[in-house]
Image (cartoon, rainbow, N blue to C red):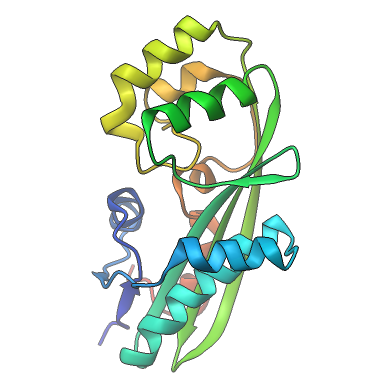
Amino acid sequence: MAAQVILASASSIRSQMLNNVGINHEIFPARIDEEAIKASLISELTEIRDMADILADLKAKKVSAQQPDAFVIGADQVLEFGDQVYSKPKTQDDLKGLLLKLNGHDHILYSAAVIYKEARPVWRHVGKVTLTMRDLSSAYIHDYVAKEWDNVRFCVGGYKIEEKGLRLFDKIDGDYFSILGLPLLDIVRFFDANGVLEN
């Protein structure tokens, strides 16, 4: 019998990525107060990389407590720029402001995944990608946000590099799948080594 895999996230792109490589799974979004937890981590001067890992861990831990026999994947992304942490934009104005800050500069995207089984962590990984934005006009950025808002509002950084968001960048240094929301190569290696993948 194949091992049960659960994705503790409502992200359709994460689920699609798992489906694309043949990892059959169920979806049980973890209900945690991400904003309150993140605010607490910021006040405690937690390293930005570690914030992504902690949030991914909390999601996997919560669902694993209810589904202990399954491999539960928790995932989270945070964006670092100028020693500040950014998450999903709340409004179009938030996104415009962020993209104007990032304009012409490098920023870092951390993509964390933690896998739990029997209510304990058995694997974790944090992918780091450096993205260099083009030097764009404010008119271009305003137009991009107006046209793409409904498509990118739930994306950290407000872009999908698999779509028109790629046009925002000059250079990307790091793992493509991590930008999409999961360090997929590393997850596949873990599941393959643990006999979860069916040939």
